[in-house]
Length: 158
Length: 106
Image (cartoon, rainbow over all chains, first blue to last red; front, side, top):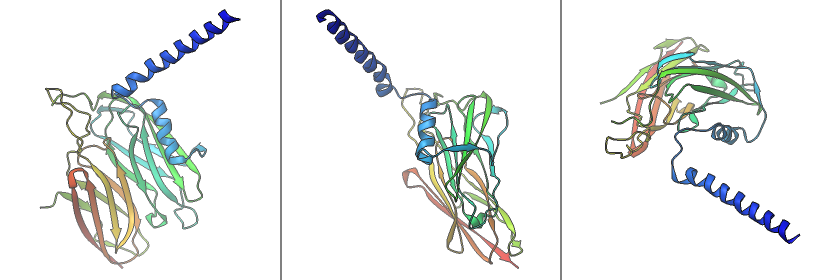
């Protein structure tokens, strides 16, 4: 019994040590890319845990881009844009840039068409997620994969 | 000196959905790049963009470092009345720029 207890203690000690070791690099070294976990938490901060369904949103971005410093992107949401049924906001996220957020765009029924375009930076070939928040509180999303040949390099020396 | 480019149709019919294109000249320094000596180049980006149509806010955007230099944003609105569009960009280091465009609605 005594012996068993001590191995358990040792095990917990080791596990704790491993956890600390695992945590240290996150604290001391700035992560070079947003992890899928960061992407998920950025999405959660917008949706507040509500269910995100696929559909309604069209994310238009070239599948292969040469220069990650400026990538054209258009998000279109199928919506009548009427006072009782419209898109309130469009949120764009990425998986592998240093930060998961790209932009938030706030619209209203007066917009007439739920469509925004901009140009973004991509630090790597990765997945892009667009989420639309509708006036009824539901969330809809679309994803796109982009292959980048020349990345918007974050470690670039200038 | 204004560093903004705005494209708004000069005329529209009442109820038309019109496209508005905006471009603001800005470096959008991400804060993730280094100099040759290893120092981080401090972040300098536009964080917020808003458009008002005759005083009412019709569009707003929060921008992050992942927006390319010289932020280009296009969006739509319904032409309801003749008047003025006012655009405002706000960013790091006290950056603040405005621009405006007029429209005639028939």
